[in-house]
Length: 595
Image (cartoon, rainbow, N blue to C red; front, side, top):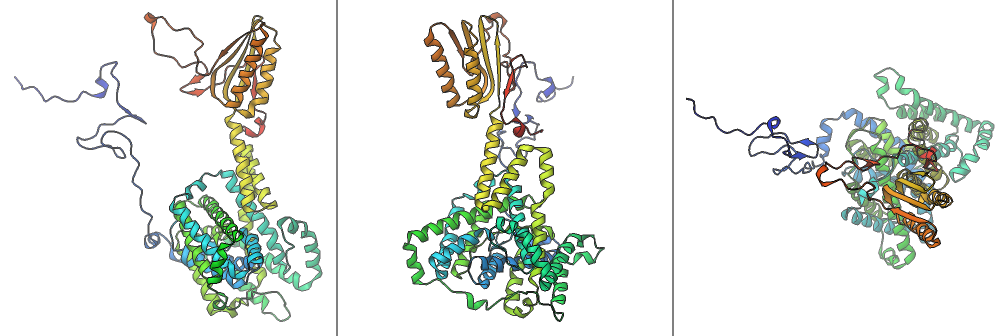
């Protein structure tokens, strides 16, 4: 007679009926060896977050990258950054050299720090108007201390972890921001393309384009410059189609070499870059500038710089993350990096810096995968400005403008409008509103307008109310389902007025299928009920949300509770269509994602 076998745990399929089975959030728990827990769960079965991996260092990033690609990408970014640094400085009322200093800090300081691996920082056009006002009101000497304190405030915001709040931004707003930056960039650089000066705002630049065309064809040198810039733009679009390995050379570099050759021809008078003494432009803040912090106007300027620079940098980070499939931005770390960069810029008396979309997109499009490319671009800025200022003086400005026009077109990306319009017309409207708002105002104001438009769209979509009105001659019934918020007050008022006009001795307002009833709608319903009851001729019955319309089942016939009509697994389901049924969405054409 064999000995009894050891007791084994009962198999799952043999569990007696009626016994509940322990489940995790995703289904039945799988058996695990004794003393161990499933991956990603605590021993008790409770889910725990996976440990956060530390960000890899630069050396670890480079192990999986192509060094040649990183170097060529850095040179492309340098070619894009150089005219922007100079142009932003001139537009800000500051010496061009200070713009280059900020670009160098953005590369060599911020570029080495963690946060966003492919985002490039430097002086930004979005701050040019603010810098110009600050220089005019407080003087160029005060600019350094303003930027210094702004950087310290950014560091403080990062340490209290406020950077993540900028991650909650609609994709449509991000795409609209990119288009809103790319469109004025193309229009503004069209003037530089013809060696002309832009009138001013993006709207003024757009209206002045016909006059620019007439002036260009009437001036031989301007026509040569425009032709050279146009060739640069065409080359930037078509260079990838050139057979390899020649297409590994950056198109911008080919255009620069070609432009330098044309500019060196006798009789050609096109404008080239002009860079002065880089070290001589640096001035450190002194006691007089520190004393200026007692001025409330200076404090207000500092706070404005802090908010706008932080917002522009982190909004740009959200946009750059959508351009590539590499590591995502760590927002608080990136805000800390921007704060350190602005602190250094302030100590040197340079322009404030932010993350810049044009340079960042050029970095991504050139194939960069690590921080090395953006760091090297700062090294190229430093080397060329210090060691080869004469070589920079040979580069035609129109060639660099052509590179920027190409970058602006890639940012504008008109195919994104068509794609989004087919997928979701409401989101496409938000994208268009953001683009036009940035074009007509400024970057921060435009983004805020876009966020407001996206929020309105979300409110409309979350406030879908289905109204059904029926009557049997004795009782008029108004049934509401979905979510009733203040944006549905006109529809609710109309439905209640129709209920009062039914002329029946009894009315019923059924709210049991509502998933949400805000204060405004609740107040309107209460007012209606009070008014009808005061007449003394109408009996009003109000079924509030959560109330049951069915009589309780007898104890002997008790059964598992069924979902309340109008709900399936907690999800509201509109009542079946009937005569008098009205789906209440006055903005349904925009709010319906399938339109």
